Length: 199
Ligand SMILES: N[C@@H](CCC(=O)N[C@@H](CS)C(=O)NCC(=O)O)C(=O)O
Image (cartoon, rainbow, N blue to C red; front, side, top):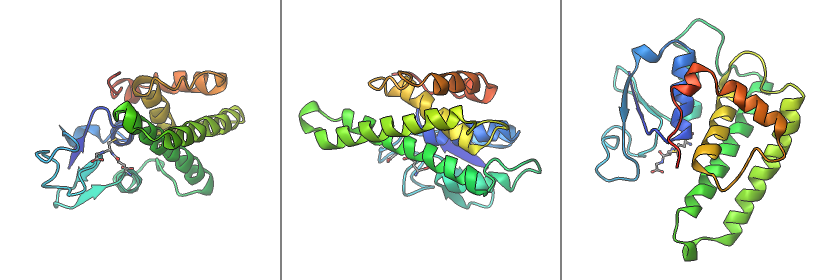
């Protein structure tokens, strides 16, 4: 099996963390690839050109974080990282939505200033702030706690990515519970080994 990834990708990081947490990391070859590049080594395997991309031993190619995680759960005998119970799916959806919004916001900020859409910037800022407020209360009430699972990994990846790659948004402000929650999960070896580069 081979995982194609980019070091800065929060989506690919979820899969990289999952592999470590599941004890599967040594079984998977890795290749860092370029993105949005017609010469990317990824394109012969995945025409969509996005990471994470997992090439199975029989040549089947899986893409999309939310499809790769259930596949990984078929490869081990322990508790599922993404058990299909309602609460986990709900938390996972919120965490993935947070990543989608922050990544969209960040991508817009990388455009020349006079080409940025102010409405989109405002929408994504509002979405992120609203989601963090809900997460602050939810984590305070015990959500995203307990055994490591995909929802915890995705939320940790979202917050790390915001802190290191989307510095325009000081997510810790007004969110002390979430801040402490993140500082705790960020100490796991699976997190320290996969930290995205800071910009
Ligand atoms: N929905 C996908 C999103 C993956 C994604 O957008 N990955 C980004 C890197 S963070 C990418 O590969 N971008 C390249 C491109 O858009 O061409 C998932 O959950 O895996």
